[in-house]
Length: 362
Image 1 (cartoon, rainbow, N blue to C red):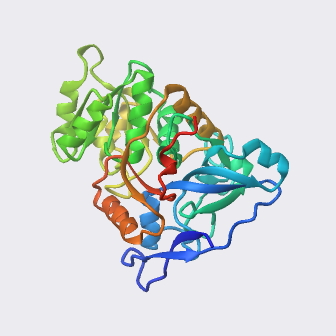
Image 2 (tube, rainbow, N blue to C red):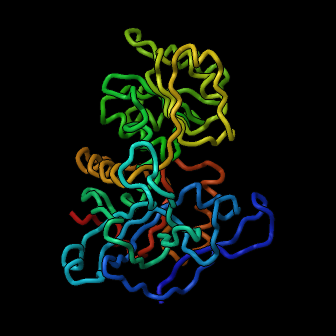
Image 3 (cartoon, one colour):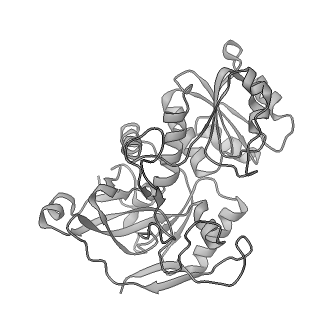
């Protein structure tokens, strides 16, 4: 029987508990009329998986495979017509369901796959059957490991920059906070390919150097209380202001950046890792700043993101790879890396231990 990785219920209050990983046998999925059968090659870790293990996520389930990000090869389908269309193709799965085309937000209740009873088709398993509408052909220049890293972080970054970042355009100046995280690095990659001048803040000089190697113009340490002034000094004389901020930290980000932003500038928040709320001083109102909250993205934005990645031949940044779905100790170490914030890029599990997922399907 195929393997899947779930969590095993452990006693404890939400936030205090940390449910252990559990390897279980699962039945081979049987695709229905509109479904394709996928042999998963790789799956990627996100912060939500840590929240699930800590019972801090809605609808936590103990019999549902973890992870929302996945890539694999279609091996069959519910009908011969579908099988002929998709068989042998490497595909990327959409990370959630319930959001089709609206730029404003989900048209109905939106659920992210994996780890919960709300969208049970997690990707940390060997085989999965999903509706044909939930897949896109993977970019041909990427390995399965690289393609599996795209769904949640790639889509969140795409929406934050392209849909919500109204002032992000060629020649503009933007700040991306928390360089090292998956969303921040994907936003950096998109922006550099657009010809945007990107500045970052990060936890260490090494991460700033890595971001600059990817195309960032400069960076500051977010622990430095003087970082706004130091960032101001880095901006070009002819455009000595920020057009947009793409932020995953929250807390005092508006207060710290409002004097750096042009009048009418945009702050896009996709997370609040340093605090559960964002303070908006009156000074931000007087400067007509726009504050946009954003989450993952729609099915349409998912397709647009992948199309852009294919066109520009963008390679996501991979930090660590664990080989083998049965290697629970190494999987736990992957979680520990994310909990400590030690990664620079995505954390990925290569489900197929033979290494076949390294090979492009070009």
